[in-house]
Amino acid sequence: MKIDILTIFPHMFDNIFNESIIKRAIDSNKVEINIVDFREFSNDPHKKVDDTPYGGGAGMVLAPGPIFDCVEKLRTPESKVILLTPDGEQYKQKMAYKYSKEKHLILICGHYEGFDDRIRTLADAEISIGDYVLTGGEIPAMVLVDSIIRLIPGVINEQSHIEDSFNDNYLLDYPTYTKPREYRGMKVPEVLLSGDHAKIAAWRQEQSIKKTKERRPDLLQ
Ligand code: ADE
Image 1 (cartoon, rainbow, N blue to C red):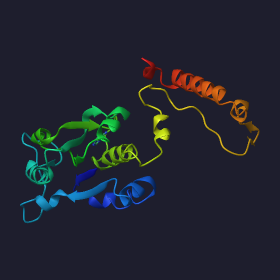
Image 2: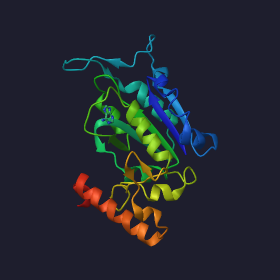
Image 3: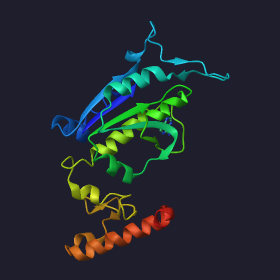
């Protein structure tokens, strides 16, 4: 998979993909990530990419020109263009699964007080990572990239994401423990020490349902 991230703050991405699972996925050519500074596509002598809003109002608005030119240069018939914006569709695990099967993603990070509305016509999808407003689409783009890459076949052990919270069964994860058996008076549940795999599976399922009922009853609907 190839992922192009369009931003005017390329340095925000300097280290984020250089660690752990994402780094391994890049090193083994399962994914290629390009950080594209769309300021380079500005025709302005000062590489300006924004302007004042028509009709008045505070702040500056990202102009359509540089983003259109940049997307049109990168896009192929196989590309999916995603615009990160707080008024987009709320991001969910099932969307991460869907995008993990794509060949090419182009992520557009909005910034400043907003972007020219015509930029939306470039996008196949508009996505929000939650009901809060960030300073730009860079952190949301990182969230998408991380959640998508781990689902590309061979990036992590498949069993570990089949058991993830928020998969199709919409249950939160069950509690897990490691050594020591007792820590500060807190004991690992006996059933996990029993070696009885059927019993352990049943306990985990029960714990998942219990936790989901308590914390996220909305997921059980
Ligand atoms: N840009 C600013 N806030 C955002 C959010 N919550 N999701 C996606 N893009 C954003």
